[in-house]
Length: 372
Image 1 (cartoon, rainbow, N blue to C red):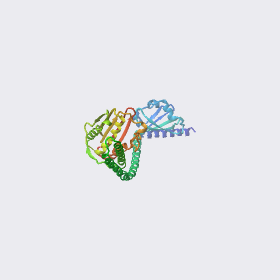
Image 2 (image 1 turned 180 degrees about the vertical axis):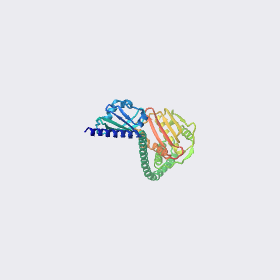
Image 3 (image 1 turned 45 degrees about the vertical axis):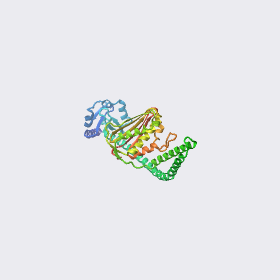
Image 4 (image 1 turned 120 degrees about the vertical axis):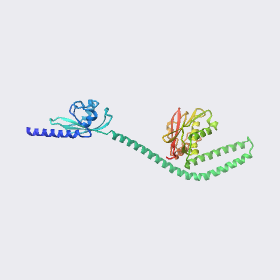
């Protein structure tokens, strides 16, 4: 019986030595601890990363607390089950996938085998893949919204074609008739006041119809090289021709110090800036500052319009570019939707941010090459 026991122990010892030889040459880190958490063995890969820790307590050598060792061994008996943990070393700054398994000794005691695989690069790739996946989902959602919007625009375009004929023609006739009647009216008479009111409301109706047609049947931008500094100058000059709108508002524009010509449709982009600027001036209500800034970065042209007005309520911020959304009594809610369509036709983006009671900023950007 003693001879059999001796042979068994020798066999276990031989197997253990063979395992140690295998562990020594593994490219993964391997170490063995006894029941008191002292390191009995470390292979060369682990010694290369951390130094020789044989004889030290596991948690002390690796810069951990004793609770980490208890967590590794918790609930593990002679036959398992193995534990799998993820651990980031404060020494190497690497992340490891660690497998802990029981290891029987010839004397009947149980040690713990730890195999560490460096998964730092894998974790980085997983994080990059997650970020890429999220960006892809966002782009797919944007494309889906764009397709839905295009379908809606196509339908609106058909409706608009009918409206252009059915409404514009009578409006033109009304305006012509009003002009003829104005010739026979006496200045300051009740008839002249009524005609003036009719003319004003008819022109307003014509303007609203034109706005709707511009949204429903947008034309493709005619891209040509130009300087945004000149565009800003023209926009500000046109705004300042309306003293009733500007009043005491200070308008400041800051073109890029060194500007390279970029591609854009001058008339359409001017329409965008005027739309945004008029909204800001109306919000300022005659007092405050409107600042227009342009710069170029990352092969894109950027324009920011900032006013120190009352700001936009957080609940409204996600709605303002939706067609027909407006807080104005006489607004159609199409101005910002038209501006967004023009910028997107340039392959660009328009974004709004606001701090209620402090400021509102609209940021417009598009590729300088004119290609999305």
